[in-house]
Length: 101
Image (cartoon, rainbow, N blue to C red; front, side):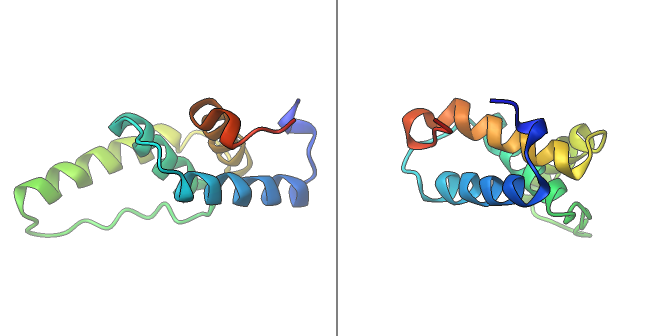
């Protein structure tokens, strides 16, 4: 199934469905996968402004650094491409919980 051929409306609906399935699953994802879900979602929704906290505690600073790195990696994609990548990531990691068939 070629997601590039989907209309904007159909892609938006599928993206929201993927987001809901990822949000509701009981599966545990590796940290790097969670970061990609986060970055693709934020970029697809045009919410990719990074907010830097002046004096975060050490763990917060580390999390912010990883999130920032993930955001920088997806900046090269359009919002549409980020939606498609999010959907494909959901397909790969949710298996039968999220199938396009």
